[in-house]
Amino acid sequence: MTTSPEDAAARASLPRPRPSCGRSARRAFGTLLVTGAIALAAHAGEPGDPAFNALLAAVEAPTLRETAREPDDGDGPRSLGGGWTLDVGGQVRLRSMNERNKSLTNSSPRRNDYNLVRTLIHADFRHEDGFRAYIEAIDARIHGEDRPPTPIDRNPLDVRNAFIEYDAGLPTWRLGRMDLKEGAQRIISPLDWGNTRRAFEGGFVRLDHSEGTHTDIFVTQPVAVDPHHTDHRTSGLWFSGVYHTAHVDGGTGEYDLFALSLNQNDDVLTSEDGDPGDGTRYTVGGRWRDRYAGLGYEFWGAYQFGDHAGDDIDAHAWSVRLDKPFPEADGAPVIGLDVDYASGDSDSTDGRNETFNQLFPLGHAYFGYLDLVGRQNIFDVSPYVSVGVAERTRFRAAFHDFQLAEDSDALYNAGGAASFNDPSGGASTDVGTEIDLTLTHVPEWLDRRTAILVGWSKFYAGSHEEDLGGAGDAELFYVQLTLSF
Ligand SMILES: [Ca+2]
Ligand SMILES: [Ca+2]
Image (cartoon, rainbow, N blue to C red; front, side, top):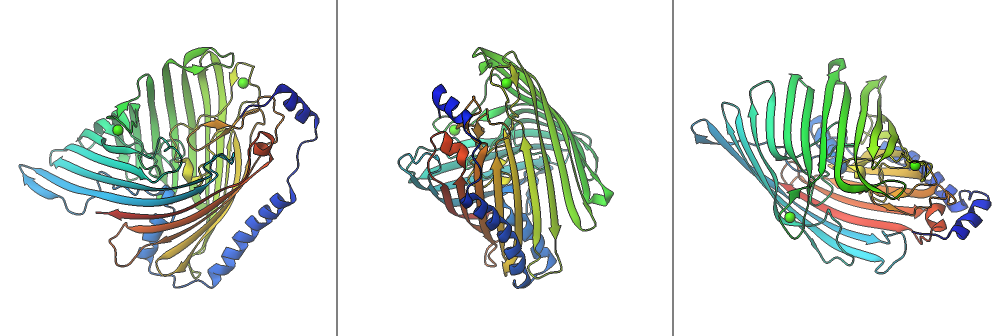
């Protein structure tokens, strides 16, 4: 989105737009949604047995769940003799997507209805002496789309995981193409929601200290998905780090400490003066999660520094999560609140890069299921409620109120792409609001780890996009079936 200096100056002289009546109404609706769902919880169905509740908890937030089987998760590997075993497994996932105006510009075609089909098959060879070879193939396709596919939709028949491992007890060494998943997946995730998932190539060492506590050290290059050719690691891009996770308080508490480095060569970056260059971005931070008096809480924070094509990096992000479960009540409801902040750039000409870089996140889980918002230049307040509404069925409702952290920086989507940028800072910071409703059902007649997910999301565009030529709201309806074997 571009705008003339005259327009920007005219807007800058106007009073800052205020939230409209409709917006206030939606905020009120968000509050009502939470209280209404709590009331609904009081009349919900059977609480169910604890084991099933645990299973449901695993699938009720599909965005935080590893739907693909972990390399070490098997139901009975077969013996090959000579100390070797083999486990073969996989997953088929089908998702029907019905999007409306996801561009937020009302550009044609406004509707985009398509089907995503993904098949994963793996073979896991292990030797009793600690040697291991793991390979996983992916076939990710899209059908019937009205708009061009995104980079995470397609990857017909490729290698998604291929590594060798040696587990000598302490530590575990891994070399090859692999997933990286750390903490609550805020900045390092395999991005399971994406049809293609995400992988890295390089070396990985896990130092095991005790149950639930480990230190990971890795030096990798992200794999670039190529829908037409074989995938390769991204040349000139390195992602390395140390990520420590520890369990405390007898397992109820957990904390992370991390130091990461993203190194970009080949002049792919651009300074605020417009000069191309290389750069290294360091990210240091931590996370603390525990429970107190029945209330769950989580604090997360990260600071970034380094060099971006000659500009100094100075960026940060933080999150606060609170949740209150009612395990004894019908439907075992949970109410919660997420607040997420990620810095933006306050001056596009000062030679300081202040936009937080979200790195390799599962943004879908945190900033609305329409994926219109990522962890960059944003302030998001999101209350939510989750409750069992019928046998083996759980309902979740979340509300988001999005504001830009800095009005002179862009809106960044879940993939990190910038849009609706007004460097003059004349446009409103009001990005909009979103409602996400999901229903997850685990059918009794299907195997474990199999789930049906139905979701509806609606984004109500705020005055920021309207100021910069956006038009209309966005909507998404989807149905997903996941079968693991
Ligand atoms: Ca490919
Ligand atoms: Ca700047």
